[in-house]
Amino acid sequence: MAEHTTKFAPRTGGCYCGALRYAVSGQPLVKGQCHCRPCQQFAGGGPQYFELVAPDSFDWTHGTPASFALDDLENAVTRFFCATCGTQVLTRRQDQAALVLKVGTLDDPARFRPHVAICHGDAQAFHMVPDNIPVFDGLPPRG
Ligand SMILES: [Zn+2]
Ligand SMILES: [Zn+2]
Picture 1 (cartoon, rainbow, N blue to C red):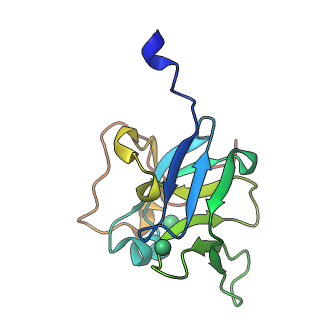
Picture 2: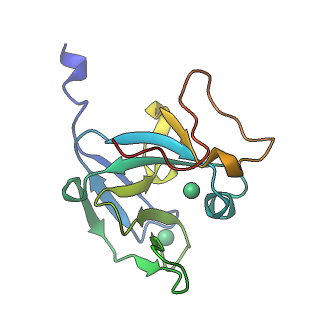
């Protein structure tokens, strides 16, 4: 049992250059991969791997992120990124309190496994989806 005691210890992460650092505690609410076109643009062509995390479980511990939202799009998401190196760390949707954390910014992303694939209607033929996880053409229905 002892080896599991660190399971819920705060995890840390940050941007490529180190100007932004954060800590996130607790269990992710959702772990998944998103295949939408903006995610492809930000991720270099692939899906983006993300965790939904509760806002009160996330703290910036160093630096202040820049942010951007399209002003001609209803319900545009706000993207939080490093103004120095450009790494995208978080997205916040207007219709949802949970934050969308980009898994690649975690110091130790090795244990991440996606449990759902979303916006797969926009997926490219070269995108990979693990076997036996639910796949949604768009966003999953609200539970
Ligand atoms: Zn940076
Ligand atoms: Zn997406």
